[in-house]
Length: 140
Image (cartoon, rainbow, N blue to C red):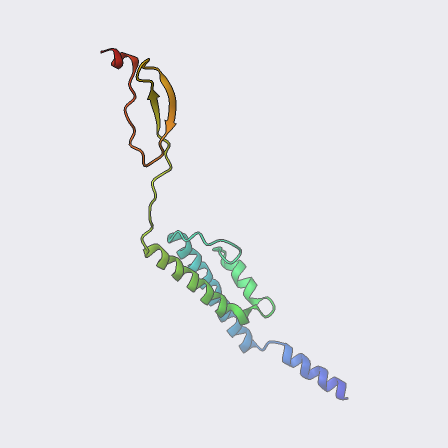
């Protein structure tokens, strides 16, 4: 008799009442809607946040939430996504230093006596290139 009472109590504790099922559905619906909204914000703000936590599939998010005990961490996942979006938006307000593209400036080095090109020198981005003298210019 004691075992049957214990089993009955265990089964009743594990099963979900209709009221609890309703609140589980509400929790998971809210979680899934928030996850989809955060993914929309991720895309619009060009945050480039990636991974399984970032997608716009409502059904995937809802099914994840109702599976097992995942609904217990739904609020934490929503807060985590909210924080990542806020960090991204804050970072986009910070002015980014735009560096010029890497450039190579090649300059002809001319022999002053023969007017032949004796070398090509890479002066890099900070160098001011000297105009190359052609043979025609040297004879004038």
